[in-house]
Amino acid sequence: MSYYISRFFGGLFLIILISLCYIIARAVVFYNRDDEKNTRQFWARESEANSVRRKDISSLDYIQIPIDTLPMQALIDAGLATIHNCITGLASERILNLSEYTNTDLKIMYGPANLDELSQCDERFTTLIRTLQGAATALLKIPGTDMYDIQNEAAMSDATAFLEYAVSIGSDMSNSYELLGIIYTRQKNSKAFKELCHKANQLSSISKDMVLNKLHNIKTA
Image 1 (tube, rainbow, N blue to C red):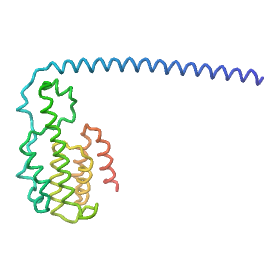
Image 2: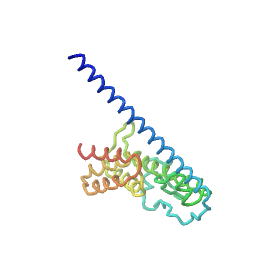
Image 3: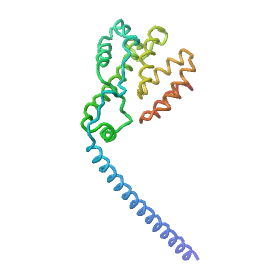
């Protein structure tokens, strides 16, 4: 009896193994087909993009840094002339947040002849949001430590202005959202914190989950 039972389960195992191999083989075939299809579509779109004529980009919605309303003097007073000069220098440059677009998208939208200029505009945006984050951090950091001076109301107000501006132009830096969330919590400004979470939830970048996680940790701390 045990012999037949052994043969039965052995045959059943073989059938399952063959079925599994068949399923895997089919999946590989479909994956390869999809991969080949996606590759063809990519190169077709890239070819289309490279044939687009140059378009006028002079009237795009370039970011205008509000030098007159940001607390720039606070940077000078805090000995942060390098950060001050970087922000004022960027104010005279063309800046665009193009993080949601690929190079192919940009070429289709504005022509390949504009790609270098648009890439530089996007690089300046990255520099800007990093500098704004640096400004806020430097204003709040206690010298010689990694701690923030959340008792300094003036510094918090100035840091908040830089961070809120960064968020308003589409920054996806998790540290900016985290620091702003800490400030709002310190100020017991639940309305502003809720709005910050709403803006974070609208992000389309890969850092969205990290941003939301940091804000959640602040809320539940």
